[in-house]
Image 1 (tube, rainbow, N blue to C red):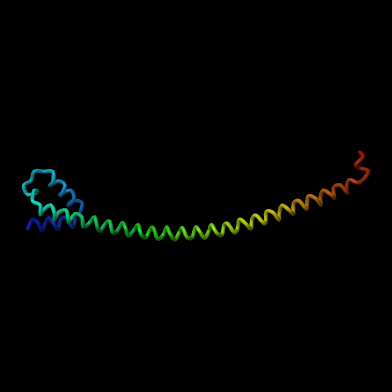
Image 2: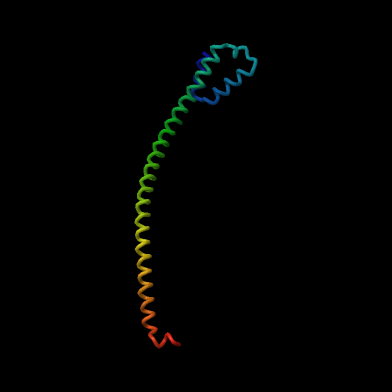
Length: 121
């Protein structure tokens, strides 16, 4: 009957069960030397740990799936950024050409506006 109470308590409070098992292994309790009690107690203490490990693995699996989805999105964004960088490079070349052309036109106009008489001053 007391064994049933121990099993029920270990299922309700897994930390107490783990502490109880380690406590009984360090004391000189004559009932703690029974191998069946230690075996059943250690089996019961692993049940919550296995359930928590399964829960943690499930959580890690969902996080890995989310990370994979985010990495895929990042890869697509990097591809689009590379295409846009090429476009920006082309626009930069076009703008530079326009500035050089404007400089040449304005430079020629400045020379024409000076005229022949102003150059001698």
